[in-house]
Length: 439
Image (cartoon, rainbow, N blue to C red):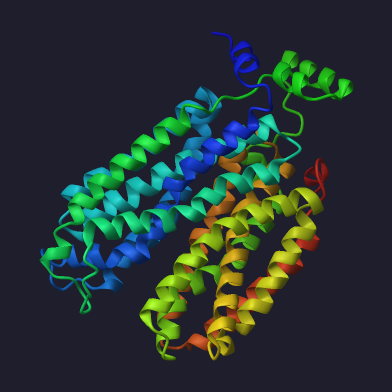
């Protein structure tokens, strides 16, 4: 069946909105890596049945592996997408991810769980992550930011949604841990993995089936600019790749490394607050109930912040948006320690840090597409995203170092956000300036 005819008959508006909404539902499931903080008490308690020496410090490796595995999956997804298109690539990724969660039902050791819920989950997530974003960007090349923002909003909200499901399955009676759960809660973990894996597979499969790339004729029909229409049709006829840079080409530019370093530095504050806001506040007398509500609210803000920054980058451009985001993060991070003296102020600062953290994942795919094109954005962003993985591992090492106090790490994250803000001055302007920044 002719794709153009099908879309013309079914959808009288830009199909990019369909791609973005489909991506939102895909990312609701892909983003459940943020469930780890809520689910780890159940999972760790279950694994302790087979290895009583395990602690939360041991099982956190599963969470740390997810971004690293995602970094591996992204270029794989980019390679599959160039050959088979976004729909097939998305299906491969989400099925691999869902299967990894489902077969965690059988995991009885930390190594097995790392292989399924860490490695398989992360690889599948990486393969599928960029597909709806780049598909939507191809339909709506002038609204890259809002497309990215809509899709990754789902990634931010997924944790809040599936936290509840996981808790209802494992601990419906709200039994307290001390600090681990007994068999009445822990024994529900395999069932939880089976239910979550099935839900992920159903939701992401339906969303993936809606992904389809536009033809230049589709874009010409949607774009009133006749000169641009003619250029698109000529590009289709000549298979023109002007303005497109592949991964090898990007790695020959200083801009690619600048973006990598900026993402790594900009994410530190967000990773810090997500991993420590609760334990830090508890040492200052905050109740578990208050912090749980605040954490759920912060996850919602994490999702909505991605949407806001997507709109912002389309409106003001990536230089101004990245500069503002990093400067705000400096202010929030340097306020984190003393804000704990007031619950309202502390909530505001934590939510501000998480909002800016989430904004990175709306803006950096957009910047990558603006500077290097949408054709190879999956592979290109995969390299830049590895900065996030390095940031998370480095921060965990810093927090565990006896030579560094918690206060030193907090202010260090603020300094890194400031350096990231300064790096915005080194970024070229689209579309062709990147070619002048070869290393």
